Length: 207
Image (cartoon, rainbow, N blue to C red; front, side, top):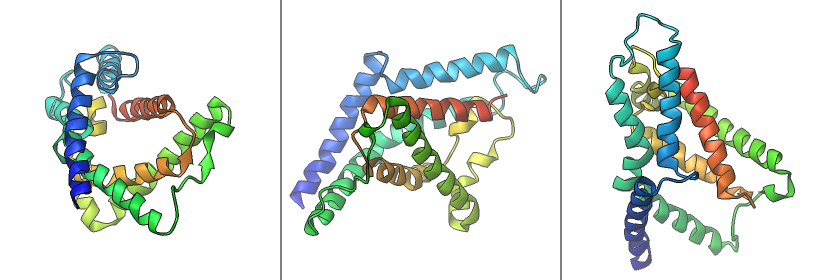
């Protein structure tokens, strides 16, 4: 039990240090500033060429959605999710070890060309998101949380990330599982796929 408590504590300090480094050290592999950059790009598109021309540039609930964006991406992980998920992943690995299973890798993506690796990562990620999103609409308990996302009354890029924190609990473990079955990919590839998905989501929700 002490082992898992240390992992839990380390999850807090590790993520806090990571987030501080993201904020204070801008670089080309920085999630924090890429999120800001992609968001500003779509905000400028909304200003220059809006679809609903009578909608205010700073639409209703704009700042609330901006808060959701940073809370769901960074603050929720800092408050509890990262530490809890570190414990869960280690518990799961220890459980597999009982049966002599070292990992769940089903596909070694480094056997494919770079474009194939990126394509495979994107397809698996997109399938998981589609499947969970379908459940959010079909399961009454999940819909209670997902209604937050559909409560927006004026569309804009930030509405993409307007969702209840419980959706993190539903989405992220399955995304982690999707990553666990793939072996041999580089973090940079996950980074690229992540922000391609963010850009698509921002575009789909933008004005």
